[in-house]
Length: 262
Image 1 (cartoon, helix red, strand yellow):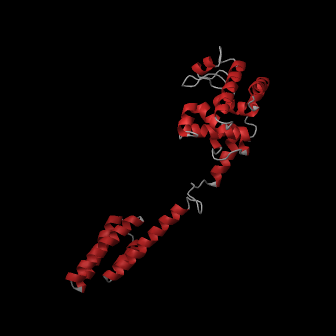
Image 2 (image 1 turned 180 degrees about the vertical axis):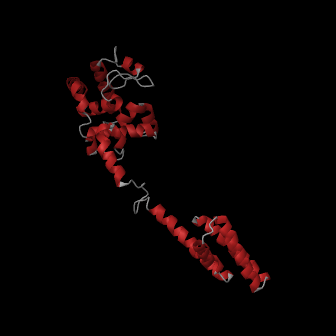
Image 3 (image 1 turned 135 degrees about the horizontal axis):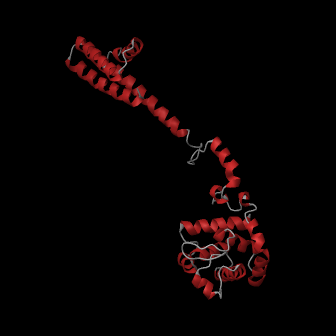
């Protein structure tokens, strides 16, 4: 029988005992306790001598309302302490972070090498070492990135970081919104930048770097604002006077900066 059920039964007996003490003789109180003990035994469905003796000791031995209420109070406090203890085990001391068992942390560490890196890296840590070697895929486009960086005075690593986040170095990818290629150029943006084939790595990277240079010039060479504008549009960055309050854009900036600063 669980604690909640026993607590409820004790409440009922406490009320019955109070009523008996006001309106009945001591013999009636004894009868009431006996009847109530029989009722609990029937509810429990347990007719063993040992359990009946324990039940009688717990309930039949209560001879007054004040004693009954005292036992109920102790039981209630015990239940609350058990609950609080269970809750505390789920929290770190002094923190509201959810507790992660060490076995789970070990499993994550063992499988991280075969899982997408971004799944386990916190967006809050700029320059996390967990991003090390994340730009290795840029090696196949190294000469184009160098050319774009020199032409438009944009750091090579920033260009590579944008490509990593936008397409993960897949030159043929198309987003659900229609953005194309390595740096995910929207058709109108690509046309504005003079691109005739957005899936050609050189045209795409050169145009993306040129666009980044324009955004850096517009926002005083602040890479975080330039990246926010690259993701959500320059007009929104201007409107909000900084990184727009959109979760997608905020995460985008954090991740690209992680790749860039590691």
